[in-house]
Length: 265
Image 1: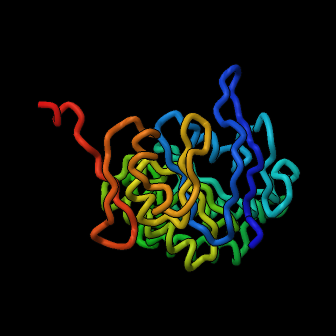
Image 2: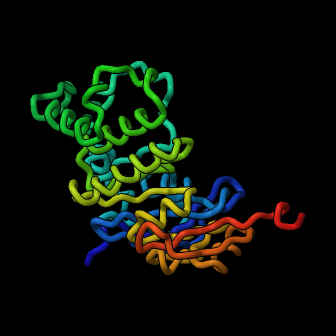
């Protein structure tokens, strides 16, 4: 199977501050691929580099075996959609207006949407369960609704690859599951490849086809949840005590945090 994304010895650095260090891995078509790791490990830098939003200082990123840097902006936007961790809260547009912006890579010089563009936007709104809210402004929505709206805009681009930076951050438990179920549906029903960053190891283990554990800019492990969710490996990565058991809800591992100070009282 040819990889949709191939990362070959990629490094990334801010001035005098190396962040990613010669990363090599690949993402296969149709995967839900989740990057985990402690704060400061380089997860957001990686997802932005994959989206072409940050320059790399070494190595090469390939999209469908063509170097990412060789894609024009509009051509790249037709193949890759990026959803940031948080969109603008004071966004004055309605869901319908904002989602339709996802069609911009396909519009002509005048930038006028046609009937097909409007229908694709309608379908994206329906797919994300926002039809009843389509005429609501984004600044009137809850965090979970707003995140689904930004995902709907990404779907409206009709990309092969969707990149998301912690889409469940700051959401309550119900909205976290709704967003992750949506990721699963995007993969299954839309045929999309999904690469996302998550700080929630248990959610990642529940949904991912493969996990990548990033620590201090290095890959510590990459494989199935059962391969990566390991007590010693995660304990060393996160510098904390934990245990790993089989989830009572399904065939995936579950991480249990161990008390620190409390356990010594």
